[in-house]
Length: 211
Image 1 (cartoon, helix red, strand yellow):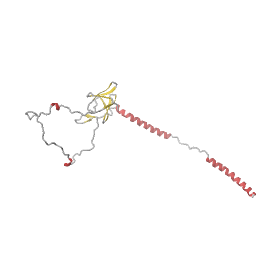
Image 2 (cartoon, one colour):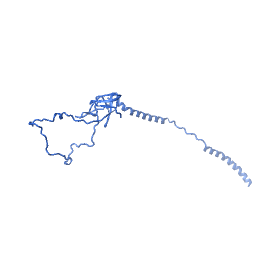
Image 3 (tube, helix red, strand yellow):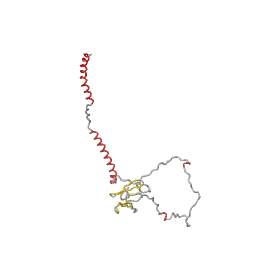
Image 4 (cartoon, helix red, strand yellow):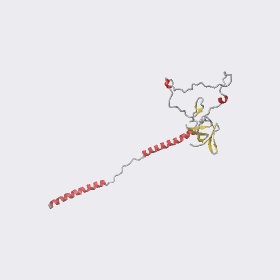
């Protein structure tokens, strides 16, 4: 028994000696510090970010400057006045109805709305024996002008001989001689008491009221 154990002990010690370096190598691999992989320089990413940021800044600057460029270069972007027959000139937009008219379409009797007419004959006779002469309407009524609709507008900005007015339809840039929404014209754009005012051809004074 003792001899067999003595023979086995050298074999075990030799196996243990061979296994010890393997264990140390495996433990060293577990705790070995891995070298980080080399990263590519983020030059391309930074360049694309700078390009996007530059485009955003340029777009914002253009949007902020373009309205003022139009305001100070009225002759290039002038508002064309609309001309109507018998209605004068207005710079207001044309309002179109939602429904169109049928031209040349056949109609039945049911399509014509009934008219409420008073069929009882009434009339007045002017004094005088001469019925052949057409006296016509009295002079005081014939020369009386029709009342014009009141159009409200306000002055929001003035500079460099031009002014910006606003009404319920929008904002307009005017100068001396321009037609206003109430069919009057701009007589002058001046300062009174440190404030800008717009004087019309009807002697109406419109003070600066802001946006």
